[in-house]
Amino acid sequence: MDRVIYMSGKLVPAREARVSVFDHGFLYGDGVFEGIRIYGGKPFRLDKHTRRLYDSAAAIRLHIPLTPGELDQAVRQTLAANADLKEGYVRLLVTRGVGSLGLNPFTCQEPQVIIIADTIALYPPEAFQKGLDVITGATIRNHPAALSPRIKSMNYLNNILAKIEGLDAGAAETIMLNHLGFVAEATGDNVFLVRQGKVSTPDLASGGLGGITREEVIDICGELRRPVHETTLTRYDLYAADECFLTGTAAEVIPVARIDGRPVGSGAVGPVTTEIMAAFHKRIRSA
Image (cartoon, rainbow, N blue to C red; front, top):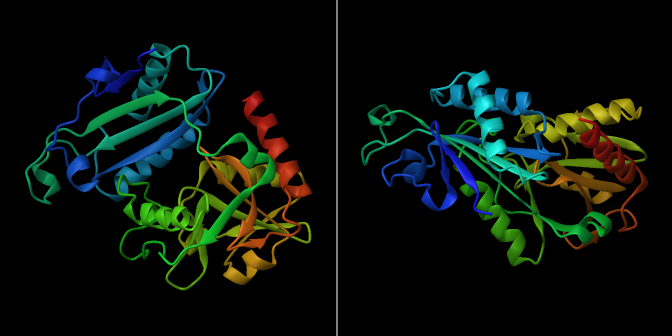
């Protein structure tokens, strides 16, 4: 089935969806985006994703030409036009729009809203059973004084370079450190550790994105009476952990088996990670 794409107020077949080469989103990565999971044909935590999108846009002085309610309706309209897609993923983008061949964003015309609905699979099914091999990368997370990692912008080159490091090393994912050497996040996911039954994750000041799935897992851990300690973490903490798992909209909750060639704990998926994964899947089924 040919997917239908929302392009600034119109639904068009994917084969006809076009973006101008003069759009500053294409030219400079000038725009923001959200990735939203679809479960049972419905967008999961759409309100939270919408709020974060508007926060990111405000941080780069990008006006979204729809109200949050109108944007939510556009997402649902797109899903209705792709009615066969019961389990999948929405990519919601707002670009600066068509402008001149220069950095000045104020030459741009109306920002463009694009909504894509399709399937996604970041990792093979067996990775959720056996865990990922990951590395810690030499490419550090963007310095927060240059570009806040809280902004989910369309410029992901920093993460892509770190991803290449991992792929070159035969690893599925790369954990990025910040300029001070503390754990920030993986290239597309947040990082959680378990040691002696206690769960921890880098605080947002360390340079990670405020993930929606991260929030869900922190809430789940509270329900399981395993409060999450948000703190600074180092490579030592990664190596000394009994368990490690990553969270993200596309990745959901996925265990890590090895870091830099070292087994995490026993090298098998641990009991706390298993418990959290089960609780997460129960939550999304009941949402």
